[in-house]
Amino acid sequence: MARALVTGSTSGLGLEFAWQLAGTGHDLVLVARDEDRLRAVAEQIRDVHTVDVEILSADLSDRERLERVALRLTDPVDRVDLLINNAGYGLRGGFLEIGAEDHEKQMDTLMKAVLVLSHAAARTMVQRRRGAILNVSSLAGYTAAGPYAASKSWVTVFTESLAMELKDTGVTATALLPGFVQTEFHERASMTMDGLPRITWLKAPFVVEQALKDTAKGTVLSIPSVTYRTAGEFSRIAPRPLVRAMTSPTWYQRLQRRAVQRSRRKASRRKLHAPWQRDQEQ
Image (cartoon, rainbow, N blue to C red; front, top):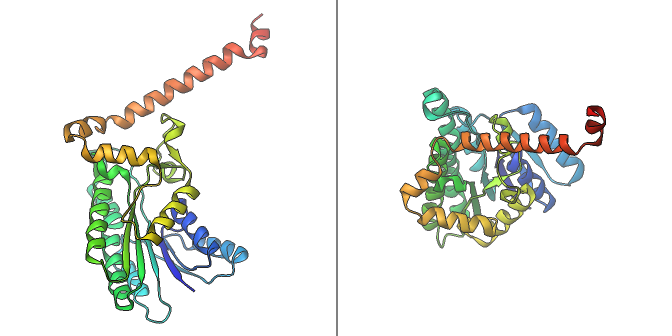
């Protein structure tokens, strides 16, 4: 039976990866910072699926704890066949509004952990001539929207280069580049994306299903939506001045203002058309 190690596995896409993999018979190694949530998720999965679920509590920005996870990937007996580097989080505020130490910790999770775990997994998998690595990146990496976008650009390019190095070894590397996905990511970063059109949102189950299919095929870049594939290609080839203009530091503020204005208009329309309001006014 195949075994998958998933980081950031107690919420968002990581949690969805865990459930879908368990549903296809994969044993799991779940990695996240909150041990209580890890235990709860593991118990829920065991109640539904007949798979082995192992947990590893680790803050991947901590080098010592990161090394524990890397060591687990090299276990020659309980082998890991699929590594999913999913752990990550956003920070609220501009680059200069946030302390350098917070940026550094975020980069350790988004980039250093991906590098260290991919290195450990790839070396071990190549020896067996079997395995796959799936790194969760983002279409934000094609933009100029701050350090988070820069880190995702690194993840994408790193995965592409790894895929080339692993060619003909029996091991593959795939980068998942979703757009906006309905998870708790934005909520945990104290962000609201209410100003975005509904069509831009993807469902987590769909994104994960497509990512796993692409990983099984050895696809290097997985972009699970025709709309986002088009947007990604545009962002990739568009002149950089245009990309910078479209993703300037004020884009989120503009989005928030539009969201507030839209909410006010909806509230105003409800007031005009509510019979009980009219009765009270008369």
